[in-house]
Length: 204
Image 1 (cartoon, rainbow, N blue to C red):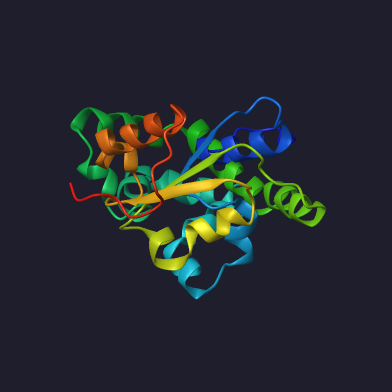
Image 2 (tube, one colour; image 1 turned 90 degrees about the horizontal axis):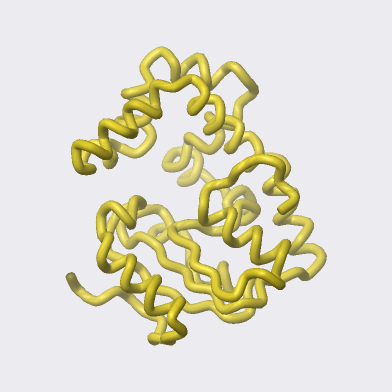
């Protein structure tokens, strides 16, 4: 990939499929749309609901210093509305440990700074050049989060990829933690080559 720093897993996956199509046979992305699309579609809902995208992209040390005053509140309450506090205790403790690490705070801020600059630029360049994801792609997204409320998620990904299927899962943004078995089953079926019809998740 062209980006010199780590991206969140879903964004690593689709960028790898675009930059190195010869090595990606099947692609799954979960609860994301391409970075360039996020910024191109930013509106008042985005500014209020995904405010951390712009906040964390501010120049250093503005967000680092503000988060560092009370990292527990930022990560566990402000950023995700308390969702992480509902994780199993061992997961909450691990999130708190990471949240208090100044290096982890800096890394997260750098990730969002890149998302607002070089990551967005690479997406825009690929769209302008007509580059597309050529392998089969699966899109899973949360039924109780922003993608379901704001976007036609499958339609967006079909502008980026030739062969897209997917489904909504009845959960919030943290799909693996909230619906682990359903999420794993969907991924395993897709990567085994099973092609279920696109549509909503079955009731659980």
